[in-house]
Length: 93
Image (cartoon, rainbow, N blue to C red; front, side, top):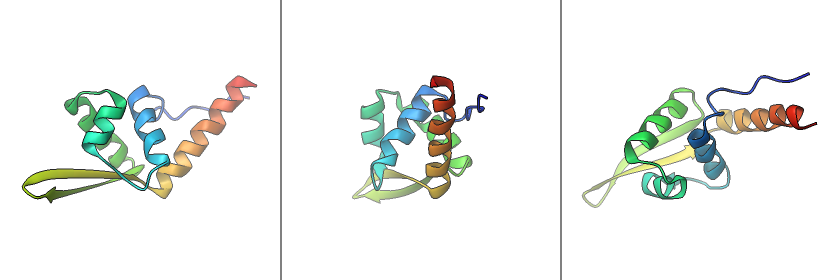
């Protein structure tokens, strides 16, 4: 029996973001942009979607005079990612 894949995580960019954040305490916007090779606009939209779902927490501050956006995965996000991977395994077997 196939389990439904979370459509929010099935997007390549959102899955990449979640995969990166899973192994880190937090990551800033520039790091995520470079690692995912995405545009600033697209990354911003996808981060908002993950944040609205409660999968990540976004913190906005300043480093000197420059804005700094830091993201970290939430417990709900970790659970969603683990569920996604387990659902994917049902397709592989």
